[in-house]
Amino acid sequence: VNAAEELRISDPTVRRLSGYYRILGELRAGGEETVSSYDLAHRSGATPAQVRKDLSLFGHFGKRGTGYAVAQLETEIRAILGLNRHWRVGVVGAGNLAHALIAYREFAREGFEIVAVFDNDPAKVGQDWNGLRVRSIDELVDAVREERIDIGIITAPAEAATDVAQRLIRAGVRGILNFAPGKLFVPKHVSLRNVNLAIELESLSYALK
Amino acid sequence: VNAAEELRISDPTVRRLSGYYRILGELRAGGEETVSSYDLAHRSGATPAQVRKDLSLFGHFGKRGTGYAVAQLETEIRAILGLNRHWRVGVVGAGNLAHALIAYREFAREGFEIVAVFDNDPAKVGQDWNGLRVRSIDELVDAVREERIDIGIITAPAEAATDVAQRLIRAGVRGILNFAPGKLFVPKHVSLRNVNLAIELESLSYALK
DNA sequence: TGTTGTGAAGGCGTTCACAGCC
DNA sequence: GGCTGTGAACGCCTTCACAACA
Image 1: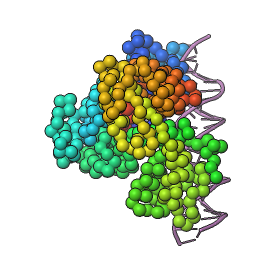
Image 2: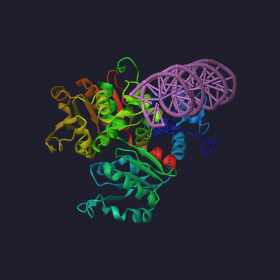
Image 3: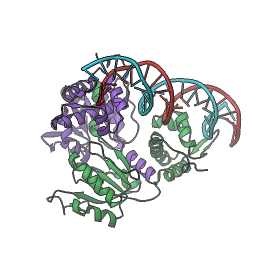
Image 4: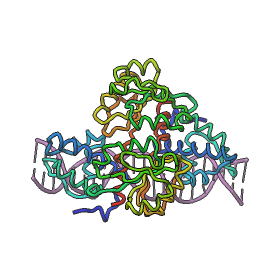
């Protein structure tokens, strides 16, 4: 019974699932075979009821009196999150953040492969980045199509972000992860996630004041 | 009239304020003197009612029929967010992400100064990073106290994050921005913000599936 | 007239509490 | 006895709608 296609799942739920998924990987590596909603809750920062409700939206994965089978639940969530396929990713902006993303082990492990890097600085174009040649922004639209890139990550500065997003969308990417501050307008068939480091630090500042 | 000390302000509200603040800076640079809740809403992705409600939690900043005075509102929000003071920041984990943070112009402009970098890799300790000497993790507690560091940023790998957080807390930081996956347990006098890149990409993956 | 400030209504996610099942 | 699955209650944030006012 999979209700995913019918039911609307909230963003917080999806983000928690991602958390459960990581924990399940650790539990499996540690030899655990079952886990209760209480344990998952404690490790993830959620509540037991929350864990059960989140999982029940997608099926009946648990056994009363026992809990959830670690390996099976991990497989279920992998499928729910769409991690049992390969995602081809392009990064725009060949700076330090791009370097950090390319080096990030977690990504490759979950099926996100960075297959292209772009920059508008002629001095950077042509450089070798972990085996990838940095390409010009002018090649972006064609390259995204050729490389069949699904997801674009914008690490370019704010001034360039709008233009970069338009190119990515024109080239047909369906998802964008944006690190530049400022609002991007995207058509509704494109999914957008924003990570704004200034907001994180400023909300900390507010809490500390 | 400042209700900040009495009223409980929600996290979403604070994050939106941070967005308004950035936009106000742009408007001022563009020579705008007033702005309406409609305009701020459109530029930030909120709704006009939301903008007015957020601002009304802290005072009566607007003029009916006219809108908000850009420069004045910017000053108000700066004070609300605690950005009219200097925050001393330490980064733990001298990798690519740390490089990106140190190079990030936005931070310095808003009063966040990175004054120390730490790593546990002997090969990195002693290296020069934009004028900062990379210090050993073993120096962390003493250095945080000496340098009067308020905020710690954890860019270390997941395995090290718990230990790093404990050291930061023992040394007396009041805020932590954590980039490592996994839950950190902090006492309630310490504020914690998490940025988890895997969750961002996986929630995109879910939306695209 | 144009726009703010705000009580009231609405919507949505979380928590409760317990029936159901192993 | 232990733990899941879930309808109902709750609480919180958002949106509405309009009075107040420049």
